[in-house]
Image (cartoon, rainbow, N blue to C red; front, side, top):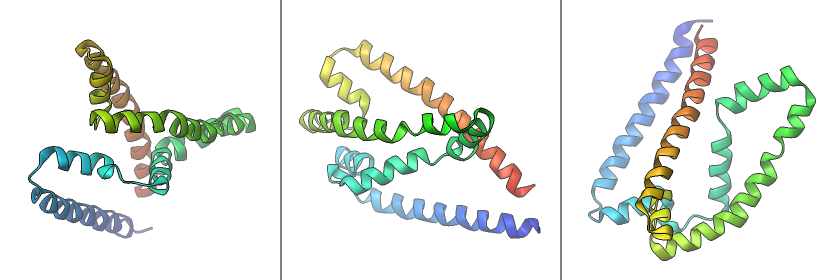
Length: 160
């Protein structure tokens, strides 16, 4: 397989993503209200429906762990792992249906955009906010490290 035929679509895709990012930056720079922009950008002006939320959950689960880690563990441990992994479906439904609804209602009341803002409004304690923010950063970095390793292995396999 010719390496140009593999690398060219990647370069074209990255160029398109970069062009869309520049277009979005120009469109966003027309907004003058910083808080309005943040609310619109991060949480879609609080007007997204269930379908968009479902697609966000699906794209969250569509990661290197879904394509590399999950099948690898299933191959190693057998069919039981697949059944165990299926618990993610009702867990996501219950999390979004029970907790997500409450978080959304309270976040609208206190005008919170991030989890840290939500905790600040709920507990009125900066230590809780700092500890939660540090926990989010640490565990997010660990999660992203696994995703980058999985993505790098996928690219290595595809590009040779």
